[in-house]
Image (cartoon, rainbow, N blue to C red; front, side):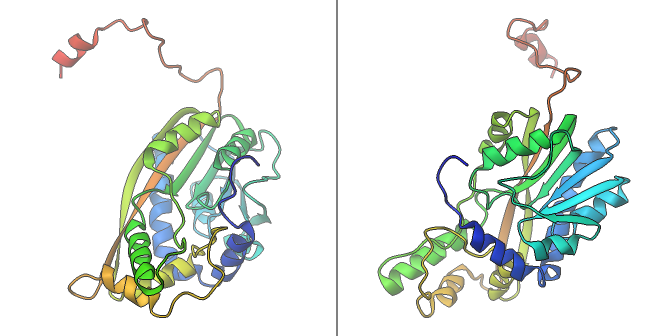
Amino acid sequence: MTGPVIFDRRAVRRHRDRAALLAGDVAPILEDVAERLLDRLDDTTYRFSAALDIGGRGVVAPRLRARGVDFVVSCDLSPRMAGVNGGMAVCADEEWLPFGPGAFDLVVANLSLHWVNDLPGALAQIRHALRPDGLFLASLPVLPSLSALRHALTEAECQLAGGAAPRVSPLPDLRDCAALLQRAGFALPVADAETVALAYRAPFGLLRDLRAAGETNALILRSRQAAPAGLFPAALAAMMQEDGGLSVPLRVAIMTGWSPDAGQPKPLRPGQFTTPLEDALKKI
């Protein structure tokens, strides 16, 4: 692995082990994003036969089988979470995938790659595991998701303790996602964004969902000391709406990329265009 180590992977695994018993509590959120992601399969007539589900938390693998994918393997950093997928499952680290070249023609990662330290390296390994002209689909939370929570926690801790520890994971921006795919060697990389509106009648519902999803603080630089008394109530109170509820937009990047193949369409080089841009715009 290259680059800075931001996340404590042992902590990520512990959090996902604990969340394996609670994942059903956040299944509607996971299923919503999974459906949006897998809808991209409807844009191609390709019939996939061997798929890898990375970190699907029990919602992706059944949907792939229902779509007619005959061979589905699920993997997760947590052995307990891997077991909730049903079918064939292995415990595997996304940073060190144990699959040979061309093992799959479809890889799906639903809300599972944002705790990876070397994301470009992980994406390169995924491309390596794909057959030529194989498809990679991923959903990734991006900014401004949880920005309000990060700001509220920082402000409240500064007031209570005179300083603040990092408590919310950094997230990429949408514009970074297609560049990451391209850097990893994917062909025809595309990244667009969708927003899932989350609403809570009680603010602590947000923290319960983060825990149930295995999304609690796993930063290397996190404080090992107990949080200041009253920190979370103060931060959540600052985020509350007039009716006492809480609205939290989850912005998700939907990423698609293909393993390179000689038969894929290629973009035209500069000077190969036959219609001037000015003429094309006149027709709009």
